[in-house]
Image (cartoon, rainbow, N blue to C red; front, side, top):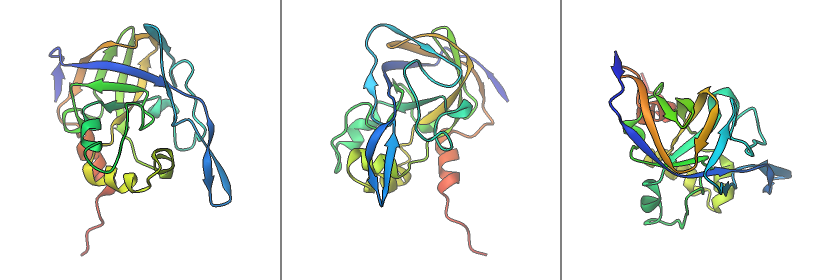
Length: 195
């Protein structure tokens, strides 16, 4: 069932972009990644159909593209991460947008958000990979993300445009029958049932 927009908002706290650099070695292979991003200075940035200006991905088979144009991560999660074995600052997960005001159980796949002149649509939860473990210096974070469900979500760009690096994203459209990001993430990592 389609819901009318009810002025639900997310606060955009920070925006990050990066380009591929050498993350380290994995076995005998040199690993390139753009997970190490820097905060955007200024007030606005252009959101293109497949990424923010200045943002690139090293592995286009698994990152980026139409359905993973930008990665959003709830700022609220950092306090939970930092009470365990991690010391992480905003941007540590390679997110493009640090948002506040909703977590994975609150956001639905298919949600359409207005961000400045742009429209984005939640496409899928983020699935952690070994590069996250390399980046934060602890491969346990992969299992911890799966266990905690603190994954964030990807979005596709429905309408490119100029977006503020601080301000609001406003919910424009939601299908209340669509799974939440938390539900979709749990389905991805659900153990196969035995007959």
